[in-house]
Amino acid sequence: MIAIPSLPDVITSCVYARDKGANGIQVCQRPMFGTGNKMLIIKVLAAGINPVDYKLPSIIPFMQSKGVGIDVCGEVAYAPAGCPFQAGQTVFGYSASGGLSEYCECEPGKVALKPESLSAVQCAMMPVAGITSLQALRDKGNVQPGDSVLIIGASGGCGVMGVSIAKALGATVTGVCSGKNREFVQSLGADTVHCYDGEDGKLPLSTQFDCIFDTVTSSDDFNYEPLGRPLLKSAVSGSKRSSMYVAINGGVGDWIRLLLGQALYLGDALQRRGYKLLVTNQNSADLAALGDICTKHSLPFHLDEFSANERPLLTSQLNVDAAFTRLKSRRTKGKIILTASEDVWAQHFRTCGN
Image 1 (cartoon, rainbow, N blue to C red):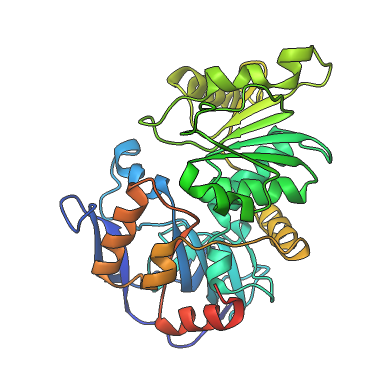
Image 2 (image 1 turned 180 degrees about the vertical axis):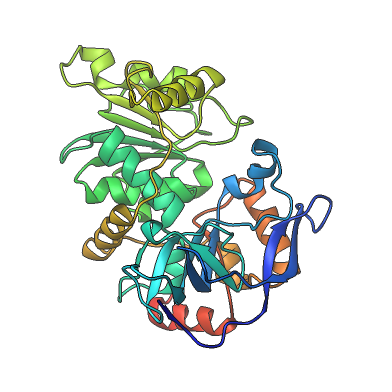
């Protein structure tokens, strides 16, 4: 095992704390993690936030006092024996203890080396949104070069990555967003943009698609599935190849079918025909593949204007409150990232410019 010699005894972290902060999330002091297990300890450089981060306490009991945040990029401070990573290497991936922290724990099988050409801020944008989009399009949607793909919610975190990854896979992409985000989604590389608040209605009803990727996660939003599934090519033409509607949230029945199929080792066999609800498989291989796609195809990374303008720090209660308030507004355009220091932001903007 290899470790940086001076790990602090106490660290600053964000934890779930009912009635604390503006969103039930508190910045506080906590003991440093022990080094006697199989987990990596990461000195966090940058961390991203996602809707699941503020929804977890209402989904999973006993989340109080647990760490907040999944997306993370940082420097390995401790690597257990037999681990493929070494202290001093920079990795990105999934935090097991909460990424909004000076240090966090990660499973070695759920991180990958940071590509040299990408900043820590860029890598912190990738894990949840990027792997969700990659597995939705490549695995569930079986997207092939020349396919026609519809991305619903194209200006949000998963939508942004979805448009970029679909283009990298060789697809022709239609993005669905509000009228005010039309130019932004076009800048991602979408071939066509449909504005759900325009005179042509919620979806482009005169077009058929090989894959529809629905990135909408809130039950308060419009349910696109009944309107969208008839637009699948196999639904219209009876094509032998099965077109697919892939969603990252669904009704109770769909969740039961998905979870029961997984419990019985049946995969997607119990899901409805032409429809797949996705739960991501967090793994190093896909993180590395995602990094390769991003660098090989020069995929665009987009910070939400809150992060770009405010350059928030993950140890600031004021910044954390503002970040989650912005995220919960469901009006983000790109990803919200917080960093460990102003130096990390400075390095990002020197390297990337935006």
